[in-house]
Image (cartoon, rainbow, N blue to C red):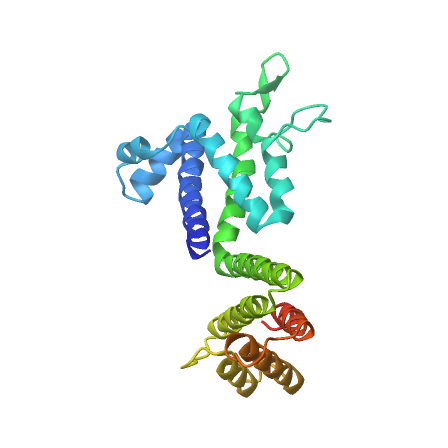
Length: 267
């Protein structure tokens, strides 16, 4: 899971950097004179060296867009349709103007002219604002990356723990009560450990009992929840350590159901 989250972080940062280069490439293709003057006179940089470092927009954009759409769909799902709208030509578009010119038009070198003198109504430079908006979506994700990844991390953790609890339920169904209880106890311990880590609470011994005490002292949980986790700990001990008697079906069911409640309500 950690590797997955870190890969997302790297992908967003890489797409942001590529977006900067694509935007500069697009501007340079449309306004080379202005770009050269800006780099030479304002930034005091070698324009020709800069120009050599730029990608060819038409060949580099599609891979960028595919990855950007996947990441926006994952991290900023409400904006995915906006990203697509800025790329695809509208099906119901009756005429092309500067306002509805999209990146797909740019890739096809679409230019709309009017009159005897072929005055340009909408041309490739009209796509620059569309790409700027797409780029700003990636920049926005970069700005809220940690909170976005935290949400994903929580979802992944919840899915993993739910899967483990499902295994415990299957073991209990087949009357392997001690094994089922041991799995549920492990899930509870993992979840409490994640809660403590997320809240940066120091716990010397990461046992259910000690983490429960710490969460109560830090007022993360109220007394009824503290007592509930304490009872679950007792059932966990029965399954993990008490060899004098076998845990009963109802006790294991209480442990599984109680753990499920904790992982869904204690964060």
